[in-house]
Image 1: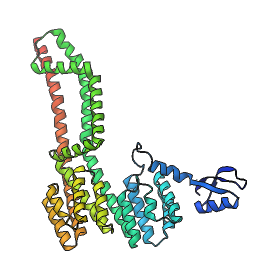
Image 2: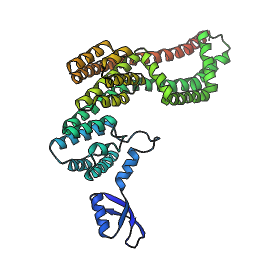
Image 3: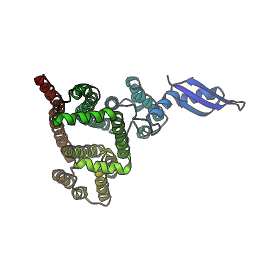
Length: 406
């Protein structure tokens, strides 16, 4: 049973505060009124704690709710609503079912607000870090049209696909990142601790060393003398890079650079196009007005280059013109996408066309990620092998020469 913390005035006019258990705020107020207490403030302790965590200050990292938790909850919610279970009872069932404590606390608070007469989308809007604009807007459209169960199923599918795409990209990037970190650590250990001990033998013999061995010794001495400075410099450079990237101008410049990168630039563009088409299709299918849908899509694509193009398209739509025009002028969207959107606008089948675009680009992204992963793995292995091979060769050749001289 929920626990409420209250502040109020007694019949004698004294300030009182305390804690009591009750089914909801309304029942708690009735109990306190019966005890002669005029309630000034009353809060659900558990919901308040969850609310602070989910919609807290800007320095918190994430919401504490994964997209997998959210999509699973949404699918369960859709099933309950489709079974014609009253909204408050459905939310109550979710509170018992959901395992994530942050999400459970948020749903408990949402249930309380809905029970007190709030609409579902307004209650969801109290938790922007858990329920993004697309989620709230689609639920609003579902409530208005009476198709909330269908909307929730579409939201669950949308969230699952977005999560799947995000995981594929992360998996593709994880291998080269781990190899890079591992390679850096191995190089530091070799140059600081291993090579100096071996090359000390060469110094004692005073033999003439090949140029590549001399080069290796100089690099080893430099790294051994300044390895702390090198490490601090690299860490500082990374911190500076991430701070620059998080700034408004830095984010714009970085997005432009990313789009021009060989191999990766094409993949980033395909992901942005797929996200644009899938999100806009989902919103339009959910009954969200076109202009509102563009406002949401602009924030979902997570790319400033595409944000500007989408903003121009929204302005075109608000003036009664086509979507395809500004998309074509930008040069950022492939011709086939422009063609399909144009046909969709003319035939009144924009949402199905966008879905086809999204499905096609999801398939291309899957193939591109698989190809990129299969390409990066051998490149990283060969690169590491060449570096280690050079070090071994530069050390072993003088050792063989010493053996022949003796």
